[in-house]
Image (cartoon, rainbow, N blue to C red; front, side, top):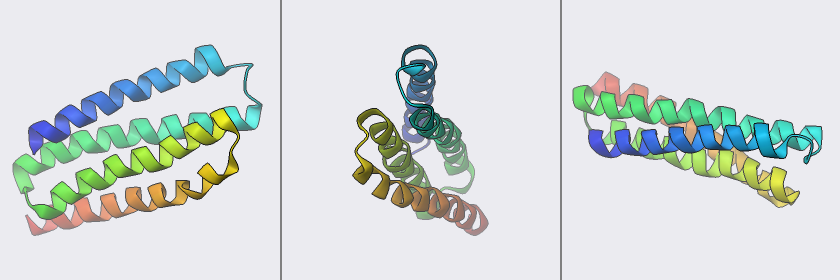
Length: 122
C-alpha cells in the first residue's frame, strides 16, 4: 500500500498545485471575492491532505494495518468531497455543492484519528 498511497499523494499534490495556479492566474478577477476565497480554501485543504496521503504511505511501511490503510482512503475521500465540492461551488454557484463539504471535512477528521489509531496499534 505504500506505493499506492505515495503515487496517489504525489498526483494529488500535483493537482493541488495546478488548482492553485488556476485560481491565481485564471480565476482572479473572474470570480467574486467570496467565491475566490471558497476556491482557495479548497486548494489549501487539498494540498495539506495530499501531504497527509504521503504520510500515510510512509506510515504503512512502519505501522501497516487496516487502520492506516483506511486513513489513506479517508484523506483521499476528503479531498474529493471537501475540496471538490468547494471547487464546484465556486465555479458554478450551485449552493447544493456546499452540502457535500462537511462530509469531506468529516472524512479528514476521521482520517487523522484513524491514522493515530493505526500508528498506536502498530
